[in-house]
Image (cartoon, rainbow, N blue to C red; front, side):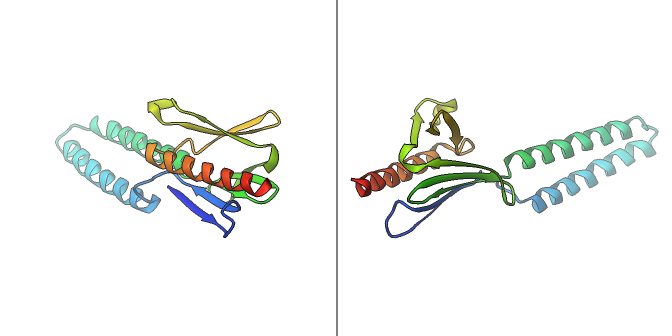
Length: 163
């Protein structure tokens, strides 16, 4: 998801980038609770019929599903915020608050677009003075195209202002 908030000049403000996560953590926990209940009911049926060996494997299955769910949500539940000021571009990444931050001088920074990334989704990088990071690596094709258009527009307006 790409959220754009620019001021009247069109070259200062911020862009918020978020992965498209279809369900919230609470909704995922509800689904996991339902899967757990159904799995344990089936396992208890087999235990009552003498198939006690089903119970440890059912538990192992639930642990694997729970760990996978947590790892997926933990990996994809983050935000990137790109702040544009007259003198700086600041990139912040984190979950609830900025955990990492990079500052670039606006006049010396360049955005690079690599057209043929994974699954033909372009890669966007910001580079200045030998430091480089990728932006929006989690965005899909359409969102990445929107992000690129916004970056091109902001950059062009800033260049016109400087001249």
